[in-house]
Image: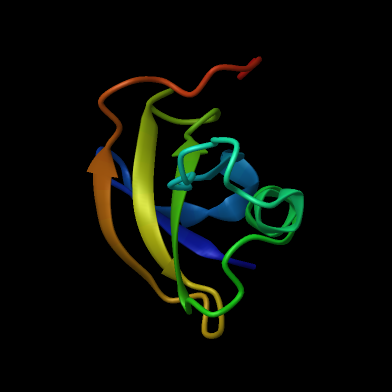
Length: 92
């Protein structure tokens, strides 16, 4: 089980949280961009990076959204910080 460090509550089991997705920087969409490039960005993601910026919601705790940097190879989580804006979606 993945242990996630909540900025308010400390380290807790993954089952207390809801995954809110990754923070992705999208390229500007214009007429010169090939549809294959846009497809890679949207559907395949950045497979070269070991670190992923992710949002998590502490559903069974302090009920806050926060962002972490997680190494996708080792699952080591660094730098938890409260999210400035909530991620849209149903968190309950």
